Image (cartoon, rainbow, N blue to C red):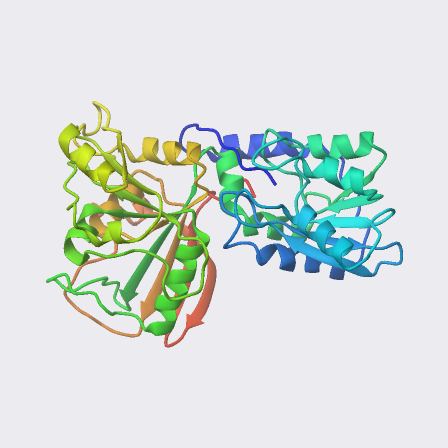
Length: 408
């Protein structure tokens, strides 16, 4: 599947809905043409590529013969590697199956352009695939129905699920960051917080290890692993000197690291440099000597000072997210202190909160975000509970800000 990006402004519910409607209008969905089981299985296969695929979407493909028997399955590989359709066809051929007259079930429209790999729609046609059943249209403007058009022009039957089908919503949820980057031109921003039952994320002296248990911490690493980038601030670096990599679960891909460091105070011996990965540092105040030293250690330093109306001594966080989208970042996983958390929330840049709540009361301590006092309850930031689960002895609460996922 595709792997390109564009940039734009802060996300807008009305703009996102208008854009997604224009994408949906490109193809003509028909009623579901196959049994539920095959489509559900296609999504399950797609999920297997979620940790591998970024910045590409995680896509699944199933190849079936004329009798509906599954010949092979495949999912998106690491960036630059084969897409789901290619993997499935290679597996089928390796097992001696003929592809002529077969049907390919895919969770997302086959790509139609030359990116890091060739067009999947052409590969399907060349292999003799007779029919393609897709759950959803690709939101990438470079595809957006063109894959279907090329397949049909080559004589391949194409079926697309109606946009109101529940499986379409599931397919978009699986790749929520990719849809966000393509349709809103900004990553999906997920803020992770571990707190006590009374909302404390650290004691007054800064001690926070460990409020939650092993299971919650492992799940937090899984959240890191699915993201394109982990975002933190200088407060966390100075207080904890963390690694902020994926350690508690197996992964072949470390997400990029993004650090907000307005005055370029990052120590050259910080543990953040100990992990092999792409490392972006965003600063507001130029210091070319320190920039050169940090880049000699492997980081990329980007100057993004705030506007006159805001503070020129702080990083323009909205511009940072737009820049990250241009760098093919789908999902940003925020693990920061209460100051950066507060700045992101006040700027309206957070889409989702993932909060691990321990059954403890810490009394005096630091909260999850530095926010100004409210004069009225109507001024509260409104979220909707998306999921509530147990994570060992703790709770995992996923809440989304109203309207942020309207593009799904």
